[in-house]
Structure formats: structure tokens, C-alpha cells
Image (cartoon, rainbow, N blue to C red; front, side):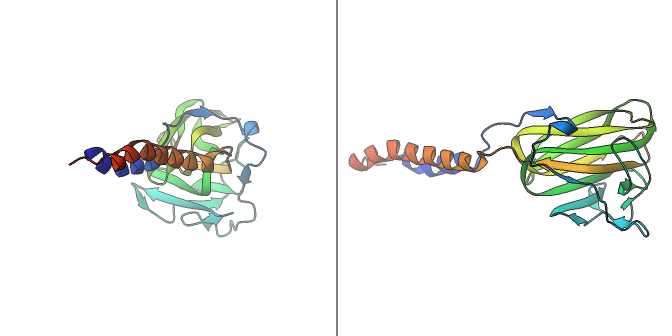
Length: 222
């Protein structure tokens, strides 16, 4: 019967398909889980400055792309833009032309955030945009309003996701020629994530048992 041929594909679909789309919510700097890790880039050389593309900090890989291609010599650990959420040494760019800062996390997380400043004054909508991915699968994105912090435009961009992710891509308003990032913070609050896969597997096995067993007892011509 065709249903018997279809069941293995159905089981595979269940195992590989996410349970639901992610729901993202803004998250304040003081509302991360107690287990959150914060990277402040202290201890890195600033004379000469440290290249950020390919930099690994506490098992977190940082990358820089320009027009989607990896690039060196544009983003460094150095001084520059100081604000309430960014203090030297920090990540800073020397330009902001179609740049993206990629952060590859050591494991799946549900909370992520960073302090930022851009070389601009006043309030700017979409001062920074955070895109989250699980592997190559988009999880969601969020824009953040930048405000004087206290002089340069900036703030803290934080998000909580109902679906775990392992990579974040950060971009900054084209109105600013330079951006800075500090206090990269992340945590995993989804204690039941490993069990979800087992639950789905048991469900798929149950479906097979319900549909497959009767056809074995009453074999019909295909």
C-alpha cells in the first residue's frame, strides 16, 4: 500500500521540521539568565589593534563580511566610540559600507545581546539589526532604535527567542560611517530542547506502529 511507502518520508519530515516559528522579544541587559556569558574584549591587543575577522573569544567565532564576502582590515578590537554600553577595548570598524559582523556561538542559545554605538547623534530608527540563524536556517530578526547614549547614538540590543539559534549577524545603520560593539552576551534557557527531539521521535514511531501493524496482518496487493 502507498501509505506504507509514505510513512518513512513522513517520519523524516517530522524529525527535520522545526516545531514552530520563532517568537522574538526584546530583552534588557539586566534580564538575561544568571548563566549568561558576557564577552568584553578586555586583554586583547590594541597597539596594533586585533583583527576581528576570524577572532575566537571563549569559543565564540567572530567574522566580518563586506557585501557578503569575508574581509580583513576593517573591523578591529581597539578604542574609539565610548558610550554607556561600549567601553574600550571593544570591537570597532573603520568604515560601515555593506558590512556585517557575524557571531557564531559555541552551542544553541535562546538569548543574545550586545552593547553598541554608531558614529551619529540623536535618535535613529533601525540603528542596528540582529538576524538570528540555526545553522543556515533563519530564526528571526529584530531592529533596534538607537538613542543618545549619552552622546553617540547607541544602546543595548537584546533578544529572547522561543527557538534556539547558534549564529547572529549584526548590521548597523548606513547613516553612520563607523560602529562599535561591546559586552556580547548570550545564554540558553531552553532546558527542554534535547527532549523535544526525543518526543518527536517517539511520536513518529507511534504513528508507524498504528498504521503499519494492521497492514502487516492484512496484507493487500499494492
